[in-house]
Image (cartoon, rainbow over all chains, first blue to last red; front, side, top):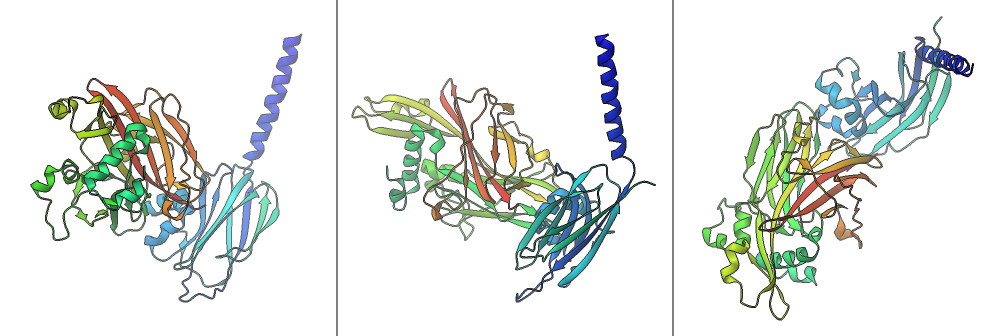
Length: 171
Length: 300
């Protein structure tokens, strides 16, 4: 009798966890809209900064690069966090060719990403480094399966960053 | 013992006396020797030059005594200079780099008085291992009947005819040093992280060119390619650059497990010297293995 009870409970538990897993992999899409402000800086000479935006898991494993703006690959290593997590691999295998862009002027820049991820949470990373200037780095923990907005406070090399996350459930 | 005041005025052989005297009591307190690369991480499609400076000094990465090398005019040291055991040792000091594919390149170097300098070109993707190698140093320590500590260069067998009759507390020591750092061009590789199987080395839980402030790294001390057998005779000391600009050295001394494992959480970005040593008893006396590894830690 007791054994049957246990088995029943075990079955229930399994069903619950299977259901949880199924929810994670239901194929819904996450859309991320970013407004990244590069501040006008009183610097002479002023060089437009290198910028990297990318996703990592909550455990800080690399997921993918969303944006990479640079000119000369010799200085890509100065985007230190991105370089170790994704850059050095993607550069070696020419994976940056499709996603990279030129460095950008000060102002608000829109960056969009849409994809399907297994995780409920992810770190959205921002790294900005400027020749003869400084470096700013921030990672924001975002929820991927819930619509929400986030604001990152300005730092030296970036102004305020607005993040809008929309989750589009599988129809 | 006023090492700092003395060093400025005495010759290299005298420096060695001081070094040995301090070694006599605590091997971990030997004068630091180090190599500092201009870059540890480089990127892009062009070959990259990496400059290397190396020296022996108490102030970490602030050079004091050059470690060999040709003169600026290109002359090698003469044999006469080589008769001095310390000069002979310097003459045999050799910088080399192991490329990501395992090729060993010997580097010519120049003596700049306080430091020795050289460079290599990283033209392949992957991790290079820089080594400054010195032959083993044999030293025989003894005390006179007045209790004064003395030393002679050479094994006990080699120097015993020159020992005074009243010599006591005779101790034969051999020092085997490894001076290392790692440099990566583009993608990291791990071939050069594997212990070569000679002397004191580490296994790296995190690639040495991917260290960031506030992150933890695990290491294991390896002697001749195998984990060290005990932690009784081993020391690890990790010191950040810039000791001359602060009053305390603030070295980190992680505890070492019986298998030689230890871990460190990097407190802040900077260049660190990791010094490790391990002492064993051999038939001919004590052997002190030491490792001097330069590591760069990036800001978060």
